[in-house]
Length: 119
Image (cartoon, rainbow, N blue to C red; front, top):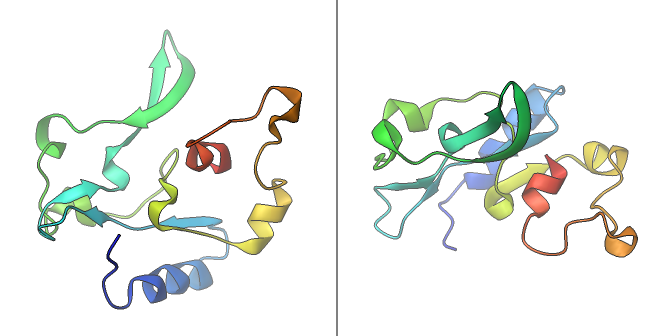
């Protein structure tokens, strides 16, 4: 991963200005630095018959080929989960929720879903 100058400062400022926010994420770009690989507008709650059964991504329709300056990719707001590739989690929130699930009881997440675990 290649980070742009100042990326962490913006996450820190958001967390400091909004104490009610426990996690702050940022937009991820592809290697051309012009196309959005992932951002908050891609996150969705998966529901069936009025019940939530998971969280995931939607990269279809207007979100399929977002450019870094597209309005959908510039919006901030609450999302059901965010990738830990570029995620700031406050220390207080992390310890309040008990950190990551313990897999010893067979109920934790074994690998690669720590972002959903935290969310």
